[in-house]
Length: 124
Length: 332
Image 1 (cartoon, rainbow over the protein chains, first blue to last red):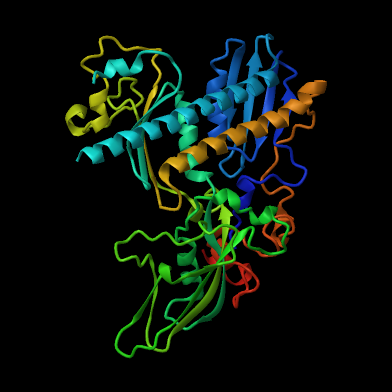
Image 2: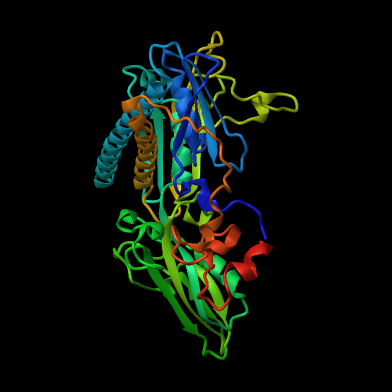
């Protein structure tokens, strides 16, 4: 028998498991360590890269501790202007807004492409 | 068209669709972060739900191919998944095993009676039934003859009779649920950012051909000084699907999946924001913790050992003639 973890554990939370666990770092001010359960580089890299753009965020980095563990750990430090948790929440909603724009732009451009192509085939 | 013009203007995300048909969409994504473009690629490939055969109840198989071999082939057949939102995940459904709300039944029933030639069994030979939406769960057939995928060949007297249950799933669980074939993803074709350190025999420039997209951007010669602060902001994406979902729809679904993922994070963090009380019991968990009783299928999978490791996923289940995980589990 294989001892690989069941595949559904890559994305389904265990019963009672939290999606995100937050712990404030006691040694460094305004720093928190987040554990994102059942998430991977898709979200880890996305959040980290976007947190770097905020001027209040002084530190943001993530790690996937082990390739078989379906979680990543995100460490966020701020200058005190915003709490680390607020920074992550703001980051998430900013990305959602950006994705909305991407979606609208894609819909628009697809329509334009279809019109352009329709015009071409009529011309021929 | 001057390539410099395309980057000027506002810094809102922009898209330029270069080519598109139902299988393929080719576009340039501009003014987004590399991490965002890459997350979109990852999500489109691994988390957009599709339908695939997940359980196979074999009534009779006298062909030369073993049951699990055929079951594995069946699992990999692309099924139409355009209106996938009309199908529920089996694990979220109220039913015990599966029902028309959370599955599609595809039956195969064939027997060769021809003395002289073998019978070919194709994916068009499925009888599709018991489904929530007529556009979901049909085998994807794209060949000019309209036969679909060859599943097995039968000699005279051989018979295959099986009932396949297709379920909704994502490719993180098993690659058979992947909506995409190849997804092309390129940025900085002329390597101005020096993200690549090209290996060479004698001369990297001669030995590494630049892609077509390289003509749309400044070349190394045109670059005067290296810009240390430059970030990639043009991504050449070519998204090709296996036929279950239209390519443009697949991309839109990917965006939605990623947005939902982020919304989940917000809702997980925000309730605590209200009373400013962070969760204190920080404890990294191993993936095995608390998940061992999963195989009973109480919460997910409805009584079938459908979601075990490895390839059984496509044919596990106690109702088949072979008893699911116990007999075939270890050897793959």
